[in-house]
Amino acid sequence: MIYFDYNATAPLHKNVIKKIQNIKFEEFGNPSSIHKIGRNSKKIVEEARRNILSTLKAKNYDLIFTSGATESNNLAIKGFIKKNNIKTIYSLETEHASVIDVVKNLGIEKKFFKTNSNGTVNLKEIEELLSKQTSSFLVSIMFANNESGIIHPITEISKIVKKYNGIIHCDGVQSLGKIEIDLDSLDVDLFSISSHKIGGPTGIGALLINLRNNISPEIIGGGQEKNLRSGTENYLGIVGFSEAINEVKNLTRICNSEIKNNRDLLETNLKKLSNEIKIFGEDTDRLGNTCYFAYPSMTSENQVIALDQKGICVSSGAACSSGKVEPSHVLKAMKVDDKYIHSAIRVSLGWDSTKEQVETFFNVWKLDCFKNGALNVR
Ligand code: PMP
View (cartoon, rainbow, N blue to C red):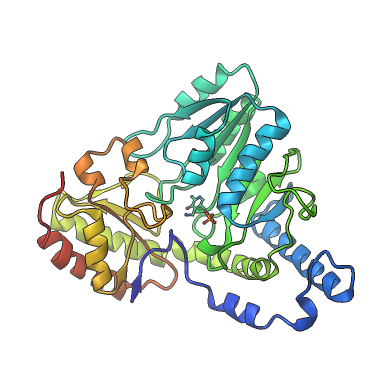
């Protein structure tokens, strides 16, 4: 099997498996219990919290464990708006569904920054819009796009938002383990992360909240997580997430060296095949592991199936839509021609991807998708 779908989820890291297997009876309690086992697990949860904060260089932040970034994004946006009576939200059409669908369902004014054809934003346009803002506002913008890998200039955007007294939430899911993160210097107000994109378990994530900010909870009950997210802590998930975080520095280094070299090799080979092959965001600041490309010969779905039959796992863009293959809203926002939208596939490499695997992928794709394509894409 060749697994090239790391942006959807990453395999459990071997250290994480070992860590979870070695959890002791005396540590596995309810962190809210006052007995010894409860106190032991509470201590481990707090160590994990500190470990994640210090890895992300987040001295000025607190961290709330959630069930994943979908919940973190919901909590950040809805929880902040509720607590602070925010009147306007700005976002991007290319955001993950857990942001864009939340934004679209809010009962407040919504505005979207334009996305250029290369997937980036225009800082001048952002400044122009925000400078006219007279009431309180929140900006929600992702660090790196899950489909295209395109990286947004969060430091610059954060500065503009602050200049006009706004609040900024950043969906940092795809940046973790792929770009160096220094939250204190990014200075965003809210930052969402997820464990399963870096080799930790699914069902655990976090929202980092700048100490200057306050939010309201979305899930109410026993008052865990500083009253901001009730429910018994996902102890196994937290232990695994913390172990995965220990790998982040190493993963980021590999993503910007070996993995990027393999991705670049793939793109060089693809471009040699035909100048009809489009690589989205090619000339833009992008994650080193992501190659999102299209050749209008075969539908995305048929390519994914053809590759799957040869034991290669890739995705047709957004994998988070419950197995549905729908035209990518990201490419639509980038105003990509329909024939490319319908033939786009995303190859996302990870720490276990090898040069040989990339070469196998290329040869299989060339034979089964490029040459055998029915040229029937609209
Ligand atoms: N945001 C982005 C950019 C993502 O890629 C994902 C996962 N596909 C999410 C949010 C949701 O994360 P989770 O699966 O942890 O809910």
